[in-house]
Amino acid sequence: MENEYFASINEVSTRLGVPAHTLRYWEKQFPTAIRPTTGAGGRRYYRTETVERLTIIKELLYTRGMTIAGVKKLFRDGDFPKHITEIPTGQPVSVSVTPASVPNMPSTGEIKTAIGLLERARELLK
Image (cartoon, rainbow, N blue to C red; front, side):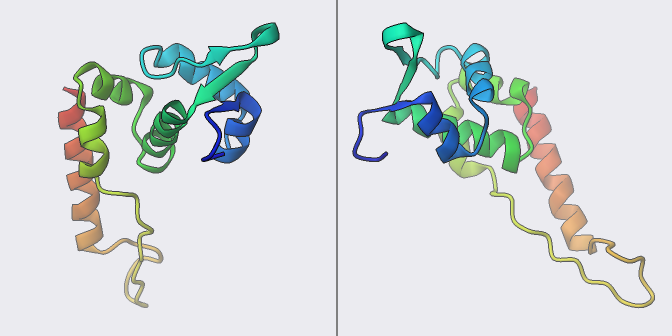
């Protein structure tokens, strides 16, 4: 799809691993960022930069746990591209379990990291 200028909603849906109805919903939620071109019969076609924005939106919502309102705020404040690199990526949490500890209990460092991420998200939503 990188060499194509436009991609159909089905191609984008397959590439991102989200249903087409989710893409249509995101169009309504982020009308300034996601504007597909419509072809014959009202079919949606996405430009490369729109697919990139959809990829970022999916990352923020699904991997980083942001809400629709939080992502909208990034767009509204004009901080969308800047915050993509600033928000730490979701990394698998390694859990150390000892016989004396509660099974699957995160370490103190992991808890502090999670609290830091939540505080950062709260600041973004203010």
